[in-house]
Image 1 (cartoon, rainbow, N blue to C red):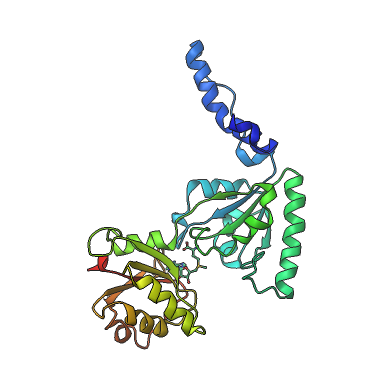
Image 2: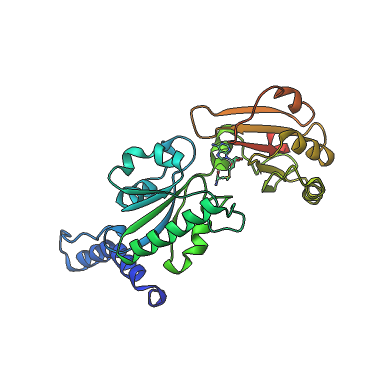
Length: 286
Ligand SMILES: C[S@@+](CC[C@H](N)C(=O)[O-])C[C@H]1O[C@@H](n2cnc3c(N)ncnc32)[C@H](O)[C@@H]1O
């Protein structure tokens, strides 16, 4: 019944995906021993736009579905770092710079950004209309502060498909080796961004609201100022609250630093934290 509401291309793909199961059921019913018709691969025959996560850190954290979708793509948009990381898989494909934060009001919206947006509009719409498969690469969970989520809004009429991936949050949880919702006083978790250094009042207000319930906090840091963040946290969480920093989660440089709110400043003194780090604050670390 729900199939009737789907776009024709999606309907065909859905039927194709289910045809193996249907054929298997028919062969069971008729006693036929072999199935000779193979379902077409999803992206080979119908134009489709995908937002695909390459996972986090090393490439062996990418899902098989993501790898297959990229391998079958005709056109791939991605940030330089991801295009370089996937160079082998992208050989022979048309590749384009995906930018960072395109199609979002948060984006820089300067001339370069506008040029990239114009190019993406033109290339993606022409390719999908021409029956091609287009992949936008992202990393982590594209739905958690993903820089490419703007593509989903801009091309919503093309029914883009999101191929999920491991977030830095998942890889960092594994690095910590603790059940994040278990034990301690704090059962709940809040995933949030570290407030901007420039807006002290907003930072204080945000933490004040959050800290009332003393949940475990997981901060996506995004170049925020570490010292200010710790100082603000210190106003709302007791000084002996455990804190962990996980850098480069999911890759071979991964590191875990543990301390308390009172001692973390000393612990990382003189050390520059990379862009890739998460901050955990909460009793589950005890
Ligand atoms: C734009 S957000 C993207 C998050 C991504 N969508 C995810 O699910 O991991 C970037 C922030 O995610 C965190 N991050 C990204 N990669 C990381 C990694 N390998 N290890 C730890 N934190 C990471 C950092 O806080 C970084 O500033």
